[in-house]
Image (cartoon, rainbow, N blue to C red; front, side):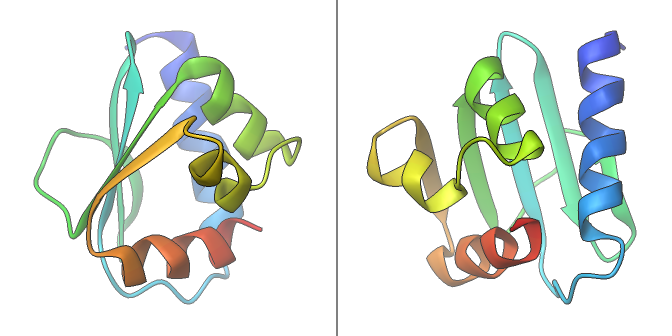
Length: 96
């Protein structure tokens, strides 16, 4: 596991610790790997999920640091969403 992916899992677990997210989401970070977020927290995994969000490493990092809003990333084409858009919006709110 790369240091970038370990840092991404830690950042996601910190952001969703107190969040109300009741689904599952998979972040595919191009060139790095995949992270699944569900009721158990974030972990490295390529399991199926309600929604899959795909972005490059730079965009993902900007969303985790708060430099980029997930909605803005989606609207600008830097984040693609496949699956349950409602779960993506719920996760976006949890990450804000």
